[in-house]
Image (cartoon, rainbow, N blue to C red):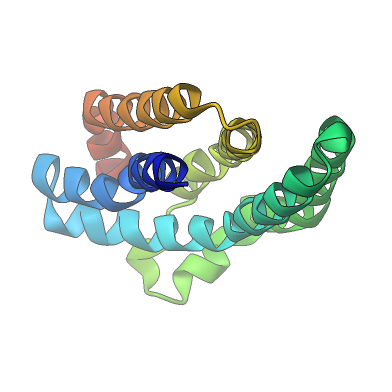
Length: 171
């Protein structure tokens, strides 16, 4: 029990790391002003990311209870995630600037919002896989996967910081 709890705690810390560090990367590598623009779009996209987070929590409960039906339950979770999210994603893709404009004219940057919206698909698939590893009690797999995702996202963000600056300057 202690080992399982410790592995889950470490993997949760790794899994959540990009969510806490990406705003710090923007403020340190770019500028506080750019961080403001980033953070508003980031917050809007995180609102939609609640859907895969909550559905995968249910998948964990159901999958742990009925491991024999894990793939059927996983398929249902994917259908639910994309079924609930698709209208919101499409709406934000086309009308997101209106929502961002409520925070001020300078925040209505559809390019940044769209780039962040594109992260929904890999985030959802990774979230499903993360939960499957938990259900299967793959301790090494959970930590390796969460660590790999965290490092990939953070290194990718650091490497592409210049592109982000260009997007901010072009608005």
